[in-house]
Each structure stands twice: as C-alpha cells, then as structure tokens.
Length: 579
Image (cartoon, rainbow, N blue to C red; front, side, top):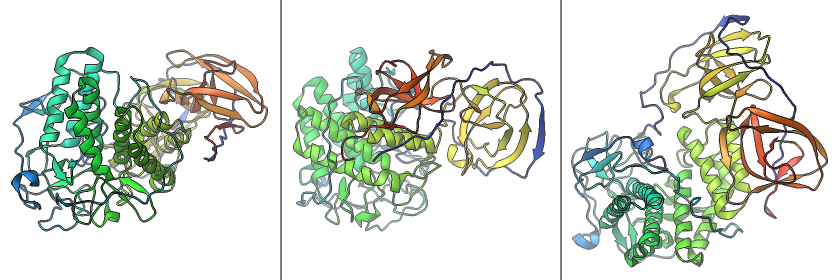
C-alpha cells in the first residue's frame, strides 16, 4: 500500500500581534440552539460506565485523581471449580443495569469442558520485533503516587456502578493499575509500588474462572455497553481484553520478581487465547466468517454478535507481545496469534473502523462512534509500528489523525493570517465531545489587514468540513476559525507522533524542490531554506506533527537532520516490500 501526499510547500514570514482590537469585521446571524447534552467532567472518556474510562490507563493519578477508599467488593460468582457448580447463572443482588435481562443465552458461561484449539485464520507476513525498555507498552516514564483513584481498603482498584451504587472488582482496571504502579516501580525502585501491583494482580488471580486449564477473569455485574439493550452481557461474563492486560501484568511481574508463580499465571492466561469458542463457554478469541482472528473484549454467542472493539483488540495484542518477550522472543504460538490479530487489523482498520473525515468507530458490531478513542487508536497503531517495524501503521495513524483532531487539553497560541476571512459560532457547549454537534450557529466575516494571533482553548471539526480552533481571548473569544496552511494554525507541535525505536523512511519519487523548516522548543520557526530532494533518495524521520497547519516530518538524516518537511506529492512513506 502506497500513500502519496498532496501539499504545497512555501516560505512564510509572519509578525504576531494579539488579536484584541476591532479588526474590520461584519456579522451574519444564523439559526441555532443549544444541544441537549449530558454533563460529564471535562476530559473524561466515553459516557457509559463500562470498561470505558479505564481502558488505556497511562496517566495514572492525573486521570483518576485523588484516592477514594471503599470497602472490599463482595465476590458474587465463585470459580465453578471451587463451588462445584459448572454453570453459574445467578444474578447479582442490588439491581440490574438498565437494559439487562434475567434470562440470557448469548453471554458465554464458565462451563469447564474440554476445548478445541483455535485455527483457520490468516496471518500478516511480519516478524515481531524487540522494543527497548522505556519504549515498551505501558511504559509512560511517569511516576504516580499511590494510591490514586477508587481503591478498596486493601489498595486494590475497584469500580462503582452508577446503576446500582455497588462496588465491584474490575479485572481490566486492576491490571492497568498494576501496570501503572509497575512503571512507577521501574523508575523509582520503591517497594510500595511493587506491593500495590502484586495486590492487584493477586486479586485478578483469586477471582479467576478455569476452563480446560485456561484462566478467565469474570465480571460480577450485568452490562449493557451502549445502554441500548443490544448485546447485554449478564454476570458472570469474561473479557478477552482482561485476558490480554492480565497477561501483560503477570509477564511484567515475572520479569521484575523472577518468581515462577507469575510465569505460571501468564501461561494459564495465555491458554485462553488458544481456545476456540464452543457455543457455551467463555472465549477470548474467535475467527470470524472471513477468516479474521479477533481478540474479543465483549464476547457473545453467536460469535459474530461479539462487539469486535478496535482498541480492546490491540490492547490484547500487547499481551501477546509481552508473552513472546517473556519467552526470550521465541514463542511460536504467541507469534502465530499476534500475526493473525495483526492481519485482522490490516483488513479492517480503513474499510471497517475508519469513518472518513470524522471520528473512527469504537467497534464493528454496533458501530458507535468512539470520539474519545480516536487518539487511542492512533497511538496504538504507532505501538504496532514498534512491534513490527512496518510503516503501514504510521500511514494508518496519519490517516486517522487527518480525519478527526485531538480535542482533549488542546490549547495554545494561534497564528492567524489575512486568509482567515470567516469566524464561526458552533454548537460546542456540551462538556463531553460526543454531545457536541459542532453545527454552525452563526458566522462572521473577517477582513484582517495583517498576520496576527490569539490564544485558543479547543480544537474540533465542523461535520463534513474543516478542522477548526476556538479562540479564547480578544474580540473573537469564543469564535472558531478554520485551521490550515497559510490560513491559521497553532504555534507549536500539535498531535505529535513519534516513530521509535526505528526511524521511518521517506522515499523521493522524482527530483523535487521543496522548503524545509527549523523550529525551536516553543514551536517558533527559526529558519527555512529551499532544497532539492533527488529521485531515489531516502530521508529517515523520527516524528511528525501538525506544524503551520499541515502535517510535517522531522528528518534525521540525508544532510537535513533537524529540519522539518511538509507532506509532499512526490515523497512517499516507504512500506515493507509487498505491502
């Protein structure tokens, strides 16, 4: 697959002045109104109180806030191996989540019978790659004091359901909490972090259900993913993403402590991915009717009614990579499953999950938009690049980045040129991104006589239209303007993508004369020059970002180290042979 870039290059000098005075403008009033939005805290993940909001936990205390200590949750569904009841179907006390049903034949159950080995899926023709310490999954290079967020009296991460007010264990949240504290331990060596990680990992193990020697990690609450009565899971139910992140947790604990119990836990957890669905029992992976291997976050029967969540599939792939690493980068079954899961993404990321010009889909079955997961998807693609060294994943990250802008914590200073001729009032009052319609309520003509600037506090997109930025000071405070090259842009790096540990390569199709730029740490342009790129030459790049309103790549060789090159029609991202 080849991706070509169509952007012109030029050299622009600008003089900045605060946009605070009455620059010539006329107002045109349009129709509009406020959206009926549900109030959610600024910066939270999706509104539904499910696994959303704890998936992708990397910010730690910054995301979960101060500690709230609550009682230890009651376990409502014991392991059938312990209770002697092979088919536990009782419902939790304390009320059901809206949409849950008492009778359910679609939720896989903890039925301990012999299982068949999964088979019959296509594989991506790539080799797994090692990743240096510090760049591996879940290594944020940040230390978070413990405890943080909601924990029980033993220091284990727990979940409070808003539909019944009860506190429950949450295997994914506990695995991510453990991974977060293991990162703090790696950076500090302080025992308290390791103790917290062990406590969370042990809770996951203590609550396991065992099917034919494989460990699954159940949830004690009924769950309606989108609160629409579709595909409701009734307790106990298990998640393949829980399997994947628990696998990463056990591998990292084995690496840190050297204790065999964590390796044994990883082995038992990995076995869940090798088990094919049997029509009644839990499963963490399945093969669809097209021969694609899915690592399933929300499994259901029939298997094609499983949700097929994009970010959950990739988090589980991290677990397979970690397991391969634990076996000194030589585990044929882990490689086999990883390549199968990767091939699934190769065939579904663009035609299935992508929603051109807008937010990508959270999952394939219900195809609800995943506004707050759109940037997660990009960062996960970049991690797949680290794991495979295949620039296809850089290309996919670029494509998703161009579709829908980062909206969380996006603020800075906007450079505004006289080519900015219209400002907009948009329906942006809702706190949560999914509730903002961003339709135009009012427009205002502008006639700027010089390049100027103003602070901005939000980026977004007009449906079916351009990316826009909202000014936060001056006479246009609260108005949106179009972001773009030679029009208006953020001064500084926006939506930064890093290509590490191996630089990607830009390949020149034909001789081309282009401008390249230098920027300081604040994102201010400090230099520019015209250069000729020769046909057949390659230029390594270690990162990209929006600069001056367009995607640009920092070069790391070819005599242009440290210079930034905007996307060009005759410069390609070099792919692996045959891609």
